[in-house]
Image (cartoon, rainbow, N blue to C red; front, side, top):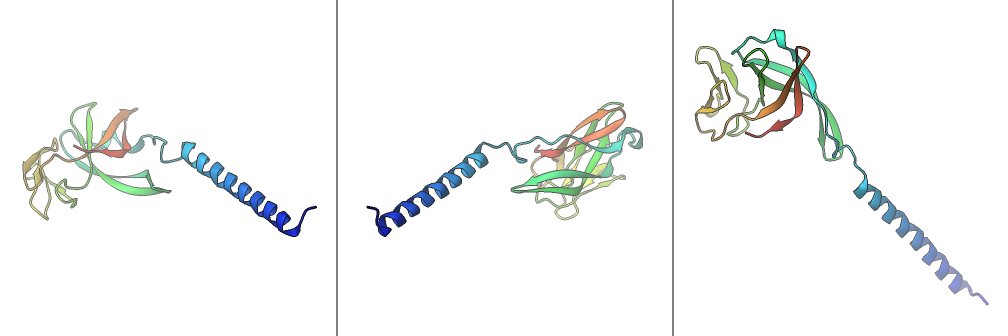
Length: 157
């Protein structure tokens, strides 16, 4: 004959089994699912090639999608885009490689200058004068149908 105690013991054991199976299934889905952090985002259109002068950097503002942990963010960011010739374009990330300060282009010296700590970079991104120890970081770039497309991921120099 079944007692009240054995009934409650069986009920609690059954509920524990169901809850454990549910947690295990959710953990398995989380670990095996290729979510947004594992997807590769594509290039975004930044500027028309005709708007760039050869050998003169231009500050370009574009929107990108960035995954930060659990969140997918749509944000506006900047790139310094340089047209080297008819088909080659380079885009630099807007932060100095020393401490991440914003730098700018100076026409009279033909160089990128970080006003905070005095780093100077050539038009090809190489360090002219420190304290920065490595060249400017670059965005991956491609040109399609006279449009400059920039990858949402920065490549370290």
